[in-house]
Image (cartoon, rainbow, N blue to C red; front, side, top):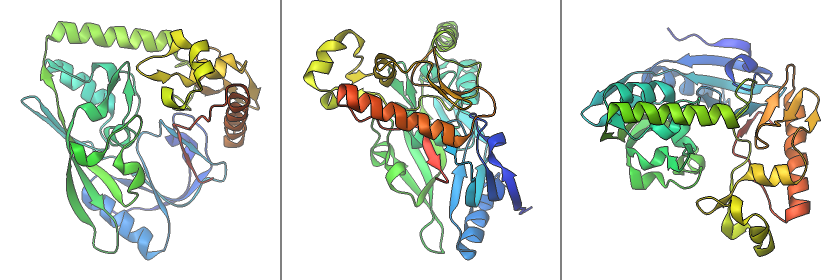
Length: 309
């Protein structure tokens, strides 16, 4: 049933637990639902925002003056070593289902709280592995004009890069479904790897408080001045200087504005201590960028998506 709700608080739909109301809100459980929601927004001349698990987004305190479509197409199937899943499937569901079948490839993504669609959109990754490495095909809904068309993209069409993909540039493409290519592995070894990854996350990340994951992208070495490279040589990993290293070196760990605080456990995380506003987080983001630029001549780039600002 096509049911549009009004003035729905968005903080209940994000891991940050921050955000004002959506003017209109709609849950899409299928491709047809999604099409109906988008056509409704187009007819009303409203902007729309596709929301997955809300794990990598900061909504403004004013909310979103349009239609927020919560994507919940959660069907999936596993065929041999292929996983075919809707964009709304939680990434962790796929990690666990792959283990049951003795399939390897998703272990490093254990503990990432988003959906498959969100992970592909931002080419989510951890510990040296990215979701883009596993993608075989992506189905998208092209929402240009009044005729909404489904298109299939091969891996190379997705233009995956570090926390990047074609989908960040092609705003008219909405991810519907993806096929991942995994490999047969040893079930016990896969389980052990997942335990190890989850243990590392718990040790290094402030998972006990609401947050939106890493706030900034790590910095490619080519964008790091030579003197700074020498200073942080031991911290450079896989050709990147971690943003958290720079934020900590700028003396910002534990810095707080309102109910938002730069985590003392991991400086690239901003946590909600309870009752934080988006404006508090935004001020912290600006403070971090300013200090890192001043001290290290490096421009940090946000990894989280800002909506309604």
